[in-house]
Amino acid sequence: MHDEQDRGLDDRRLPEDLKRCIAFHGHLCPGLVYGYLVARHAIEALGFSRSHDEEVVVISENDTCAVDALQVMLGTTVGKGNLMIKDYGKNAFTVFNRSDKRAFRFLRTRGYRYDGAHQQEYERLEQAYASGHATAAQRRRQKWLKALDLLEKPFDKVFETRSVEWFEPPYAPLAPSKACDRCGEMTMATRMVQAEDGQTLCIPCACNAGLSGP
Ligand SMILES: [Zn+2]
Ligand SMILES: [Zn+2]
Image (tube, rainbow, N blue to C red):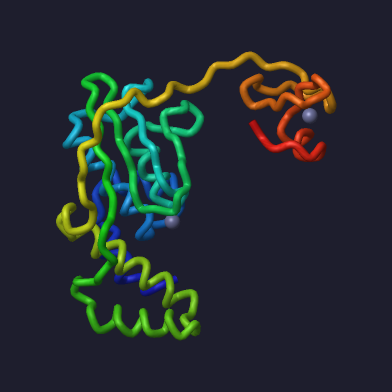
């Protein structure tokens, strides 16, 4: 663990909704804060609160820690189908409000630069990290400092906001299941592959038969 006393001080400073994200995700990290910042800003920009239906939809272009903050803050979840992950490895998120047909894409076009109160310490930690010799405690401390610094930055210094020409994001697919002709396991029909011999196969069976996915 990093310095307990410092951590205690910082913990008290954290906003309550961020604490809920941390409770869900398991730790505070820069990735979680990226998602938290986007969610908080989207709530303001699109005028909604936590979703219990599919009014809010998020397309995340990464599958990092950030996604967990979006799930907690916006109620967009993989299970409900209103969180779609297109893992392009980009720190970019499109948030839709179906009720008034508006959407914004939040993305980063600049690298991160620390400008918090622990400049020298942060630089030392970065050097240790770059050398490949950072201890686990040093890595945690660096993430912690970066997370807190991100929280202090104005949103538009971290993310760029672009309005998106409205398109209706897809609803969660509801498809009947049928048994795979090879393994017999019930499978969503839309996720099955038609083989040349007329058999309908699940993805693993199709891969074993040398076919590609749907
Ligand atoms: Zn994390
Ligand atoms: Zn199968």
